[in-house]
Amino acid sequence: MTKANWGGAGCKVLLTVEYKRDPTAEEPGRELFAKMPHAYTGKNERYKLSVTATGDWPETMFYNLLAGKLPIRTPRIYFADMNRRTTNFIWIMERIAYGTDWEKSYEPGQVLPPPGKYRDWTLKNCADLYYAHARSMARFFGWYYHTKDITDQVDRCFMEEGSLSWRRGLFAKIEPLNQKQRDEFFIGSLSEPSLKQAVESSLFPTEIAQGFLQLGETFIRETAPHAFPAKYVSKDHLDRFFAEARELSHYGREMSWYTSLFPEYFSLAHPNAQVDNAFYWRSDGEMQCGLLDWGSTLHMSMPQCLAGGWMGAEPEFMDEHEEKLIDAFLKEYEEVTGAKLDRYQFYLVFKLSQGFMLFGCFANVQWCLRLIDKPGWKLVKDRFDKRIDATFLLRCYFVQIEFFLGMWMKRSPYPYWQKWMSQVGLKKK
Image (cartoon, rainbow, N blue to C red; front, side):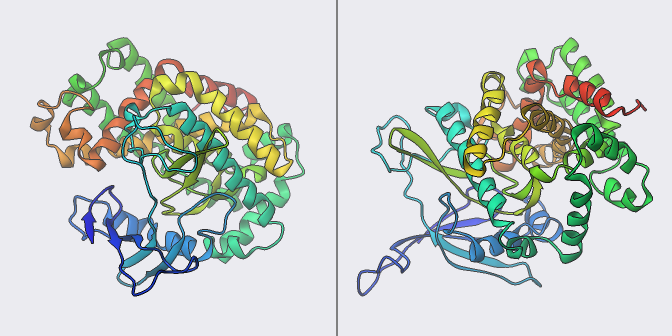
């Protein structure tokens, strides 16, 4: 048995099992993978994942209900259980036979080495991985598209009865409307008493968003400006970045609420579908992708899911590939479902999602300051510094800040927010 502590969500264990006889194809193999929660220390995410986000229970549900049964590859599960009172859990599943060297040549069907979160700079053929990921996500969403018309069992397993009923009622009103009518419905919903709670719960209020933004601004301008690329922290760029972000902060709830109002986008989703939560191999010359780590499985908007999932990509890579990845996703989704989604509107919702996600990412600056104190940041050179790169949570929360600064160079959500404001007729605050 080999112990490891990869990632921030739990303790991982590699199990090698000896049998008195060879296991059959239906039985667990010799090489297994187990995951359990970390002990709560105050310096990890145990409390957030197990108590506030309840991410571990939906993942337990996913493994027992769906793992190994989808049109995309996921690890086969052999045992998954959780104590809801203590939040302790254990999952035992198939171990993916990862490769070990990105420079090595792999035969068809052989799994490539595991990508690291926010470490795309180490990957070979990075574009192939992302396009495979886009197609795999489209196939999963396509599976849900067909499944929801056959049974509501999946919905009931991942959504409370009251929420499911309410969402169906809302979509019944929106589905027959054209885009202009949907935009009008959105504006009306902001002052509709029966929807007030739904709007307000879609995101934290403006003053909290601005508090997170201020936390980030102080960190970037004063605590660790030397740790970011010079072009990202030039005065002109930061002045524009924070001026635009402050404008967006007044509309976080409206943007989040709007992204949830499209029935054709709403799906069961993998909310942490970054390129590292997947495994890759080639088949018939094309890169293929299976999905891992289904924590916090829930229903959400497809473009919002993709916006969060691709946040870990290098800014320069996404400058070239962001829209092409959206096109690849939409093409695959149409092939799987027969449903042709409006490209402009889908991409608009994708960009709005990036806009309101910014504030949640800046909330994580508190982790940067918790794991390295302010004097310690003077010693950090950049994101490749071992203090950052070798510490999983710190790498995630620091690098995502850098990547938002990089996004704002050429792919800022701000112009799309301006188009959206004009499209829906929302007045500036």
